[in-house]
Image (cartoon, rainbow, N blue to C red; front, top):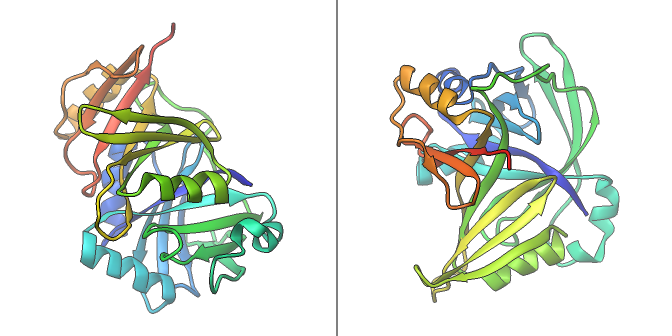
Length: 281
């Protein structure tokens, strides 16, 4: 039922300052500086090969602005939410998989490009957090307008999101939501003796949702934690970021065979950030 991970949202206080930081992390300029008049938010978008990254800030009164600002008060600047793309949102709304969700409705949204005046429109369902286990999640169907994309990527730029990491204390309940309700393929369910928990991989549109799960008796809650960015030439990316003044670990072999990895340890808005290169076999 889910077509793709459409975009990842990062809640920030100052859009311009945050954009400058992520322009350096990604090695890319944003292609959209937008406003959501009915929601009280503004955003900056970076379209990658498999999804787009959205920096979002509450700038006036509105339902979404309140949620973004509350998130920052509670968690600081960090990953705010995840948007899942669907083919037909009306069919999703009427499906049995979503029949247990309370008080959901389809709403229309629009974003206006502050530079060009161009408009993008969509339909979405904002799922209630009590049903999504604490993670801000929306389902989206784009209806009109185009997000400008890059013609190509240089070898030191970020090309795509490799995976996003979710922490959970209830892996079985999470599987029921992501596999059975959302319809995202569960590609791995593995117990890791080293830290006494489970690792889950869900895959959609060649992107992985990685879940680090350790069951406890606390209130059930999931949280978006970190991201791994895929690059063509990690040494070149590492060199570029080092010259920009980022704190980085050295390039080393990754846990996954035929990969190189390095961690970005500064200027990522409190988000654990990994860079990964998949080596040709």
